[in-house]
Each structure stands twice: as structure tokens, then as C-alpha cells.
Amino acid sequence: MPKDIANLNNEEEISSAYYVSPENRKAAFRYTIGYAKPHRSKFVLIFFCTLLAIAADLLQPYLVKIAIDNNLLIGNNDFNFLLWIGGIYLLLTITSFIFTYLQNNLLQFTGQSIVARIRKDLFSHITKLNMSFFDRFHSGSLVTHVSSDTETLNQFFNQVFLSLIRDGMTLVFIIILMFHLDPVLAGYSMVLLPIIAGIAIGFRSYMRKTYQITRTRLSRLIAFIAENLAGMNLTQAFHQEKEQQRQFTDRNQSYLKANLREIRTNVLFNRSFDILSNLSVAFLTYIGGMAVFHHSIEFGVLYAFITYIRQFFQPINNISQQWSTLQSTTVSMDRLYKLFSIEPEIKDAPSPSQISLTDVKGRIDYNHVQFGYSDDSTVIADLDLHIQPGEMIGIVGTTGAGKSSLMSLLCRFYDVRQGSIQIDGTDIRSIPQSTLHRMIGLVQQEPFLYSGTIVDNVRLFDESISREQVVDACKFVGADTLISRLKDGYDTQLSERGSGLSAGERQLISFARIVVFQPKILILDEATANLDSQTEQLVQSALHVVSQGRTTLVIAHRLSTIMQADRIIVMQQGQIVEAGNHQQLLDLHGYYEQLYRHSQGKAVQGAV
Ligand SMILES: Nc1ncnc2c1ncn2[C@@H]1O[C@H](COP(=O)(O)OP(=O)(O)OP(=O)(O)O)[C@@H](O)[C@H]1O
Image (cartoon, rainbow, N blue to C red):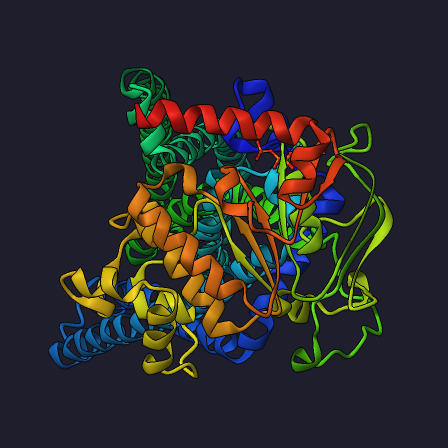
């Protein structure tokens, strides 16, 4: 994967991030073109529309040439003939309009459909990647890939591709017509062709660099905005507004500078190109004028020739302009291809065990588990834990002891390094992930809610679950009273991440999800620390009712939540150091007792 573009700092890094090796370029190109294949017939149609539009355009000067040479210059004032020529000219204009319109619409439709498909596949691919991928990748950069890089591909289909067909064909037709009109003048023009093309390509390659810098700076800006919006509460809580504003201004300014430089270079190039084009016209007018003077060509030929030479520059300019777009498309194609090529590290076994969700009992065995996020770190060291179906386990421990990691391993967000985890005696690596995730219900410390109504959030947009089921579930966990107090009740629209609801209310909605989806195992990363005592009471009783008949693992931040647990395990540095029920642990006079005394002290202080 190239370095995260959000983190590119200087232009050298930018250049190297934008370097695409020829092999990668080919593979990425083949991959992208694969998306265009189903649209073959539309591309053929586009080709013919373009062909007809160009032919209609290019025949117009030729018609005028005929009118001049075959009528006006020889004094054959045949008005009928001129009328015919005028009629055909009009017809050609209409033909060009119709086919250009068709070609544009067809190409837009095809290009947009291809890119929409790529965007859809990319999003679906990203959702299948493992947590380790998201540990490495900033969400801001992923937003950029899904939005900007696919947009660049859009430009490829709607601009580059169109230009290659339309301008390429126009150039070829103009050359043919020029040679048909006068080979000598055409020969002179051909001398100019490589000079103009050389200058155009040289200039464009310089422009490409400025363009890349602009795009990278824009990506950095977008990534910064995305990340800042996600962490806005933190920014405000820690009065980071000024610092964030400063960083934003830096990025904004550097984008502005790059943008202005790009525009300056663009204008300079286009004006230089115009001058070059005018000089060439002047040169050919001189040579052609001499030829007319010496009667070696007719005036109409010179007229047509000058018109063609003017039209000759446009496609060269267009192609060279698209050349730089093509370069950035190559980079985007490469980045998207690399993203598509990332395989999920955690995959279902080739022949997974078939497990019926209704038969799950909920026994969990951690068998001498070892785990680390990287090869050189160990977060869980040889942990052995066996949990009976329906048992409630409280997990406490120091910060960073590995409590959440233990839960992530059970959900198979990561795979164990050594040992195994079994559910009802089956290694979770041989259970299909979709089944595994239906077996386990997760209530996070900061429950995530989607944009949508409360009903949508409880049933997770699964229309097969009725509204009544949702309401019953909310009543069951005691969330009904809270929800009824909201203005639109169950139809209250929740904004992004469920803001508008308190942490406790969000937790209650997560509990209702558990009741609706009926997983046999419940994991709760408890967040009662943030709750007022009344909501805490509600969450406690919700936990009590929801945990009935389920194997429940509770990471406790307040001991009051787990004092009633069947078993409490105390973790330190990835190991279980104490285990037993509340009383047994107090009798050990160990770490748990210290925690308990500490929490009692706090409670007393709180009461004072
Ligand atoms: N995604 C990750 N990538 C790398 N290291 C991680 C990741 N998540 C956690 N860690 C590290 O693994 C160790 C265990 O973290 P874990 O979150 O499991 O601890 P915890 O006991 O749940 O802590 P807390 O009570 O603070 O939530 C810590 O040192 C942490 O820094």
C-alpha cells in the first residue's frame, strides 16, 4: 500500500507515492478496464456517433471550398448550387449536433455507471477487511479513495477516453483531408506536427507534477476534515479549536498555493500554445498565399487549409491535456487496484463447520491463547479460560491488561497467534464468520448508532423484524419509557453516531438489539462510569434481564456491575492473575480487594 496520503509531508514523498511501476500500471489498467467490458456494445455505439459527428464537422470547410472554387471563383453564379451547399452545410451542422449529443450522453451514462459500480465494489470490499487493516489505515484516507480516486476514474472514462477517440480521429481525418487538398502544404504542416506535439508533451509533464501536488494537498485537506469531524467532541472538550484551526489553515493555504500554481501554469501553456498556433497559421498563410499567387493552388483550397490547420491544434492540445489527466488516472487506478488487492487476513475455513444457531449452547474455551497486534508484542500470554453455557463472567484489570483484546479475539476480529478459542467445542476458525457474529452480541462502551430511526437501529435495518418485536424488545430492556419521551418516539431520527441520545440511552438501544437478534453469547464493554445513577440503574437491570440464558462476558469499569457475576477474572499484562466470585476474590486479599476498597472509597467520597 502506498503511504497514507493524509500523511505525505513534502514533495519528494508525494512524487514517490505517485510513482507507479509499469507492471503495476498494466495490472491496474487491466483491472479497471475489466469494469468497462460489460459495456462493450455502448462503446461501439459511442465510437460510431463520434465518427459521424467528426465527419459532419470536417466536411463543412470542404463544402465552402467547393462553393468558392467550383462556383464563385469561376464566375459560375449558380444560386441554386449555392443554396444546395447552404442546405447541406445546415444538415451537417444538425448531424454534428445530434451525434455529439448522443455520444456525450452515452459516454456520461456508461462512465458514471462504471464508476458507480467500482465505488460500490470498493465500499463492499472495505467492509470485508479486518480490523488490522483499519488499525493501519486512516478513515480519512479511505474516504479520499472512495470519493476522489473514483472521481478521477470518472474523468478517465468521460474525458480521457472521449478525447482519445474524438481528438485522435479528428487529427487523422484532418491529415487525410490536408493531403487530399494539397500534398505540399500538408507536408509543411507535418513538419510542424512533431514540434508542436513535443512542446505540448514537455509542458504537460511539468503540469502533471503541479497537478499531483494539488491533488495530494486536497486529499490531505479532506482527510483532515474527515478526521476532525469524527473527533469533534474531543476537540471541543480539550479546547483544541485554535490548534486544529491552525493546522487546517496550514493545509488550506498549501492547497491554495498549489491550486494557484496549477492555474498559472495552465494559463501560460494555453496562451503559448495559442501563439504557436497563430504563428503556424501565419506561416502557412504565407506559403499558401504564394501558391495561390502563382496559381499552383486554388483560393478555396487555401481557405479550407487554413480552417483545417486551425482545427488541427485543438485535438493536439486536447490530447496533451488529457495526457496529464491520464497520468493522474494511472495513479488513482493503481491506488484503487492495490486497495482491491488487499485480501482479508481472516478468512472462513475452506470447509467450515455447519452450525445451527438454534443449537448453540454458549460454552467458550480459551485454550492457552497467545496474541499480539504485531509480531514483536505480546498482549495475551498463554491465557487459559473455560466458560460454561449461561455463565456470567466479569473481567476487571489494569488499563491495557488485554480485556478488550480478549473479546476481539472471541469475535475473530483478529486471530490468535497460538492456542485456540472454541465455542461449544468447535474452533472459531472453522465457524463461518457470519454465523460466529450471529452467535455473539456486542454492546460496546460507546455504542455505535447509524443515521436512521430508533426502530432501524434496533433491528439494524432488517425489515424481516417487525416494529412490534422492536417495541417489545425495548420494553423488555426498560428503554420504552425513555424512547416514549422523545418527540417522535420510536421514529425519532438519530443523527450520525446516535448523537442526541445519552450514553446510557445508546446502551439501552444496544441491549434491545441483543433481545431482537437473540445471540447466545453476550459481550458487554460496560460504560456505566459515564452514567448518572438513575440511568445506571436502568442499564444494570437491562443487563440483568438480557444476560438470562446467555453466556455473558462483562468488561467492568465499575465493580458494582459484576459483583453478582458467577465468576470474576482479574487480568494483568495479558494474564489472569485472580479468579473466583466476589467473596472468594475478597478473601484472596489481592488486586481485586484493592480495587474493591478503592471503589468503596470513591463511593464514600461521592456520597459526602
Ligand atoms: N488495535 C490495536 N493495535 C495495536 N495495539 C493495540 C490495539 N488495541 C490495543 N492495543 C494494545 O494492546 C494492549 C491491550 O489493550 P486492550 O484494549 O485489550 O486493553 P484493556 O485491558 O481493554 O484496556 P482498557 O481497560 O484501557 O480498555 C494495550 O497495550 C494496547 O495499547
